[in-house]
Image (cartoon, rainbow, N blue to C red):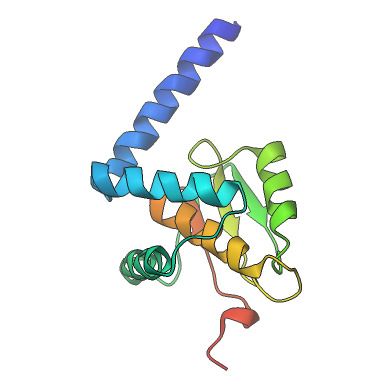
Length: 144
């Protein structure tokens, strides 16, 4: 039974990886994977990397409709307000993309000491797994 479950999980990952490769080149995917590894260890990206990550995320978001379907099952993540360690704990419990679908409800920054790290990991996951990670804007991400 467990062997069958492992095989199903491998097949699921293969499908997700193929789906992701269509949106990013192998080189881009590898670079974002390295960024995600850094961010999972609470290390900041360079300014150049952040700028490129934001640009790529903007390109992805511009192609998405205003109302997007979300694949189920999905883990819904409420206002994290820069609580990076809470996000990491959530990943330990729920798993990480691409094996888990996420809907982030905005308000990534503000109260916690790790607002920059928090928003960077959310954006990196969105860029790497755009069909598995859905992000919306909270009031802290408004132009005002």
